[in-house]
Image (cartoon, rainbow, N blue to C red; front, side):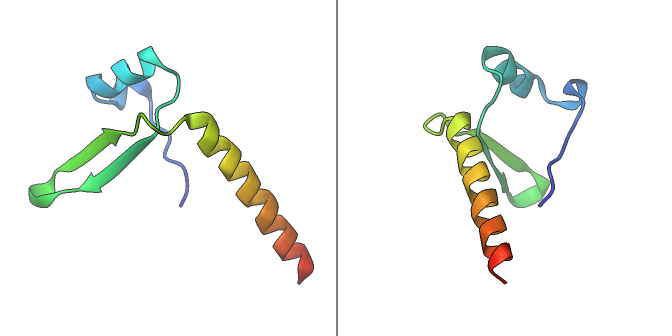
Amino acid sequence: MDDIVLPMAELPEVMRTWLAEQPAVVISIEQLDEGRVRIRALPGVAPEVIARAQVTMATYREALMNLS
């Protein structure tokens, strides 16, 4: 899945507030009934941990690709 990049002005006010308080927030997005979406901050997950995990997974994937 590719990243989604949006102008700050297109974000709801609550999301702009989250980002004003901290530069990165880990969220979950869930599609609800009636065409609504729930966006929930996951405060127990540090963005730095996600970034490190992404680097580790990319390194692992590259190593696997080099084996074949």
